[in-house]
Image (cartoon, rainbow, N blue to C red):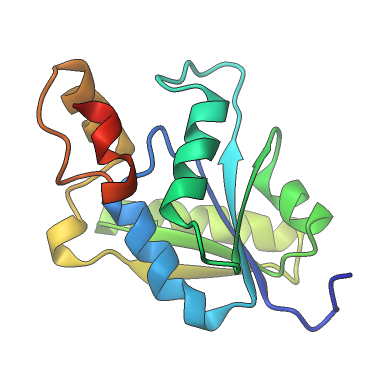
Amino acid sequence: MKSEHMKIAVFPGSFDPITTGHADVVERALPLFDEIIIAIGVNSQKKSLFSLEQRIKWIEAVFKGEPKVKVDSYEGLTVNFCEEKKANYLLRGIRSAGDFEYEKTIAHLNHDMLPQLETILILSRPELSSISSTIVREIIMGKGKVKKFVPKEIAKDFK
Protein backbone atom coordinates (compact mmCIF):
# COMPACT_ATOMS: atom_id res chain seq x y z
CA MET A 1 0.00 0.00 0.00
CA LYS A 2 1.50 3.31 -1.06
CA SER A 3 1.12 6.03 1.51
CA GLU A 4 -0.05 9.45 0.34
CA HIS A 5 3.12 10.90 1.84
CA MET A 6 5.55 8.75 -0.11
CA LYS A 7 7.83 10.69 -2.41
CA ILE A 8 7.56 8.81 -5.69
CA ALA A 9 9.45 9.97 -8.77
CA VAL A 10 9.10 8.76 -12.33
CA PHE A 11 12.24 8.85 -14.48
CA PRO A 12 10.91 8.44 -18.03
CA GLY A 13 12.89 7.65 -21.14
CA SER A 14 13.52 5.14 -23.90
CA PHE A 15 16.65 3.76 -22.15
CA ASP A 16 17.65 2.24 -25.49
CA PRO A 17 20.08 1.38 -23.90
CA ILE A 18 20.50 2.75 -20.36
CA THR A 19 23.71 4.82 -20.19
CA THR A 20 26.12 5.76 -17.42
CA GLY A 21 24.47 9.20 -17.57
CA HIS A 22 21.03 7.74 -16.79
CA ALA A 23 22.42 5.59 -13.98
CA ASP A 24 24.21 8.61 -12.48
CA VAL A 25 20.99 10.68 -12.46
CA VAL A 26 19.12 7.89 -10.64
CA GLU A 27 21.93 7.33 -8.10
CA ARG A 28 22.11 11.05 -7.31
CA ALA A 29 18.31 11.30 -6.98
CA LEU A 30 17.96 8.29 -4.65
CA PRO A 31 18.40 10.25 -1.39
CA LEU A 32 15.55 12.59 -2.43
CA PHE A 33 12.81 9.99 -2.97
CA ASP A 34 11.20 6.97 -1.33
CA GLU A 35 10.81 5.32 -4.73
CA ILE A 36 12.06 5.99 -8.25
CA ILE A 37 10.21 4.32 -11.10
CA ILE A 38 12.39 4.07 -14.18
CA ALA A 39 9.66 4.22 -16.80
CA ILE A 40 10.39 3.01 -20.29
CA GLY A 41 8.18 4.88 -22.71
CA VAL A 42 6.98 2.66 -25.52
CA ASN A 43 6.25 4.56 -28.71
CA SER A 44 4.80 2.32 -31.43
CA GLN A 45 5.97 4.88 -34.05
CA LYS A 46 9.61 4.63 -32.97
CA LYS A 47 11.79 1.62 -33.68
CA SER A 48 14.01 0.66 -30.76
CA LEU A 49 17.37 -1.00 -31.20
CA PHE A 50 16.79 -3.20 -28.14
CA SER A 51 13.60 -5.01 -27.10
CA LEU A 52 11.57 -3.75 -24.15
CA GLU A 53 12.36 -7.01 -22.32
CA GLN A 54 16.10 -6.50 -22.85
CA ARG A 55 15.97 -2.88 -21.63
CA ILE A 56 14.01 -3.91 -18.51
CA LYS A 57 16.52 -6.70 -17.80
CA TRP A 58 19.46 -4.30 -18.10
CA ILE A 59 17.92 -1.67 -15.82
CA GLU A 60 17.07 -4.34 -13.24
CA ALA A 61 20.68 -5.57 -13.39
CA VAL A 62 22.07 -2.05 -12.93
CA PHE A 63 19.89 -1.37 -9.87
CA LYS A 64 19.90 -4.87 -8.40
CA GLY A 65 19.98 -4.56 -4.63
CA GLU A 66 18.46 -1.04 -4.66
CA PRO A 67 14.95 -1.52 -3.25
CA LYS A 68 13.91 2.07 -3.99
CA VAL A 69 14.24 1.57 -7.76
CA LYS A 70 11.41 -0.03 -9.75
CA VAL A 71 11.25 -0.56 -13.51
CA ASP A 72 8.07 -0.26 -15.53
CA SER A 73 6.94 0.58 -19.05
CA TYR A 74 4.09 2.65 -20.39
CA GLU A 75 2.45 3.97 -23.53
CA GLY A 76 0.88 7.36 -23.99
CA LEU A 77 1.48 10.51 -21.97
CA THR A 78 4.07 10.41 -19.20
CA VAL A 79 1.81 12.64 -17.11
CA ASN A 80 -0.96 9.98 -17.20
CA PHE A 81 1.53 7.31 -16.11
CA CYS A 82 2.64 9.56 -13.21
CA GLU A 83 -0.96 10.01 -12.12
CA GLU A 84 -1.61 6.26 -12.32
CA LYS A 85 1.50 5.55 -10.19
CA LYS A 86 0.64 8.34 -7.70
CA ALA A 87 4.00 9.96 -8.46
CA ASN A 88 4.26 13.66 -7.66
CA TYR A 89 7.74 14.06 -9.12
CA LEU A 90 9.09 13.73 -12.62
CA LEU A 91 12.84 13.23 -12.75
CA ARG A 92 14.86 14.36 -15.76
CA GLY A 93 18.56 14.65 -16.46
CA ILE A 94 19.78 17.62 -18.46
CA ARG A 95 23.03 17.83 -20.38
CA SER A 96 22.77 21.20 -22.10
CA ALA A 97 20.94 24.51 -22.45
CA GLY A 98 18.95 22.91 -25.27
CA ASP A 99 17.84 20.10 -22.94
CA PHE A 100 16.88 22.71 -20.34
CA GLU A 101 14.68 24.68 -22.76
CA TYR A 102 12.97 21.50 -23.93
CA GLU A 103 12.42 20.18 -20.38
CA LYS A 104 11.14 23.57 -19.20
CA THR A 105 8.47 23.57 -21.92
CA ILE A 106 7.42 19.99 -21.14
CA ALA A 107 7.38 20.72 -17.39
CA HIS A 108 5.03 23.67 -17.92
CA LEU A 109 2.69 21.59 -20.09
CA ASN A 110 2.76 18.70 -17.59
CA HIS A 111 2.01 21.11 -14.75
CA ASP A 112 -1.02 22.42 -16.67
CA MET A 113 -2.31 18.85 -17.05
CA LEU A 114 -1.35 17.61 -13.56
CA PRO A 115 -0.71 20.55 -11.18
CA GLN A 116 0.69 18.38 -8.36
CA LEU A 117 3.44 17.02 -10.64
CA GLU A 118 6.76 18.71 -9.87
CA THR A 119 9.61 18.30 -12.39
CA ILE A 120 13.04 17.81 -10.84
CA LEU A 121 15.96 18.45 -13.19
CA ILE A 122 19.35 16.99 -12.36
CA LEU A 123 22.32 18.41 -14.23
CA SER A 124 24.52 15.74 -15.73
CA ARG A 125 28.09 15.66 -14.51
CA PRO A 126 30.42 17.39 -17.03
CA GLU A 127 32.21 14.13 -17.87
CA LEU A 128 28.86 12.47 -18.70
CA SER A 129 27.22 15.35 -20.55
CA SER A 130 28.16 14.12 -24.02
CA ILE A 131 26.59 10.69 -23.49
CA SER A 132 23.14 9.99 -24.93
CA SER A 133 21.33 6.78 -25.86
CA THR A 134 21.38 7.98 -29.48
CA ILE A 135 25.18 8.28 -29.50
CA VAL A 136 25.59 4.98 -27.64
CA ARG A 137 23.36 3.24 -30.24
CA GLU A 138 25.56 4.68 -33.03
CA ILE A 139 28.69 3.33 -31.31
CA ILE A 140 27.05 -0.10 -30.85
CA MET A 141 25.85 -0.26 -34.47
CA GLY A 142 29.31 0.84 -35.64
CA LYS A 143 30.86 -1.95 -33.53
CA GLY A 144 32.75 0.58 -31.42
CA LYS A 145 33.88 0.28 -27.80
CA VAL A 146 30.89 1.18 -25.65
CA LYS A 147 32.22 0.15 -22.20
CA LYS A 148 32.78 3.74 -21.00
CA PHE A 149 29.22 4.79 -21.84
CA VAL A 150 27.06 2.04 -20.33
CA PRO A 151 26.90 0.78 -16.72
CA LYS A 152 29.42 -1.97 -15.95
CA GLU A 153 26.55 -4.40 -15.25
CA ILE A 154 25.59 -4.40 -18.93
CA ALA A 155 28.91 -3.61 -20.66
CA LYS A 156 29.68 -7.34 -20.91
CA ASP A 157 26.70 -7.69 -23.28
CA PHE A 158 28.48 -5.53 -25.87
CA LYS A 159 31.71 -7.49 -26.31
